[in-house]
Length: 273
Image (cartoon, rainbow, N blue to C red):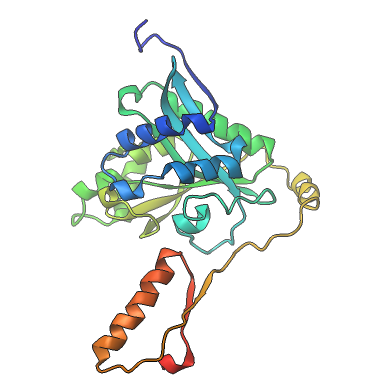
């Protein structure tokens, strides 16, 4: 049977699916640097943190797409980057008591696009919205077509033209078709060279959200702070510094180390001043 006639289905993924998911991710996001593709370990942690929110699309016995999501609790008005929302891709930020579903990643293999696969995966996400009585789903969307118009218009103007049907963008049009609304255009929330590091902040309200029911359900879980902060404290040997460059090199070492652990604050000893 040809792949065009083989039925496409969706299901929860398992740890055994992860190598095929990575292969699909690399094929879909071929313009991403390899270091930004999640690893086997990160996908394992995502599946462990919230197994009910991770889905694959299957054609025959081949995984042709996937979608990941987690429940978060975030402060309104504050813009979180992807690592903050996903715990650097581990989904350690998953919060059963949250009211927002974060659509972390969705991909359809290029050979199977335009066959409704993404809509099947979004259908799965909407079931999660309803099952857990969540207020909304949010996502950060790519705008890869903007690079062809940069310098002629701002990213906000580009997004507006796509929304009005004057331009087409492969990613943004797919998100609009899925039911998302653009709330904001942001810079440097994600690392995406094809979009010149611009992204859309997308929201999809849940029409079935029941606030009273959510308050009752939330009372069952211990209250969790909406935002966690990671602090790194530097400790270094007392040694003679012969130049400002020596001091620079010492400071840069601790800044780079703190950054690799996604710290929000870096505390130096008083002697640093």
